[in-house]
Image (cartoon, rainbow, N blue to C red; front, side):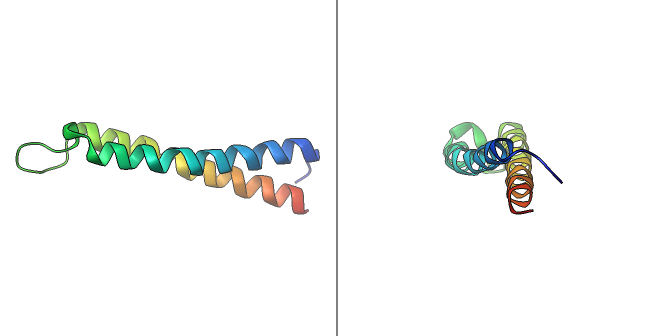
Length: 73
């Protein structure tokens, strides 16, 4: 794969940003009272946010890997 160096750096920066920003948000979601019902079971609020955050982190990791591979090659 061939991209100009500035574009590879933008991909790396974007991937790193994603992997830094989302985990603290996920921890706050787990602590949110709306995450569990009265019996302690996970609610739709938790499930939806967990899926959104995990998908974003997977895409962020893929972006980071693509940026690094592009920069190295």
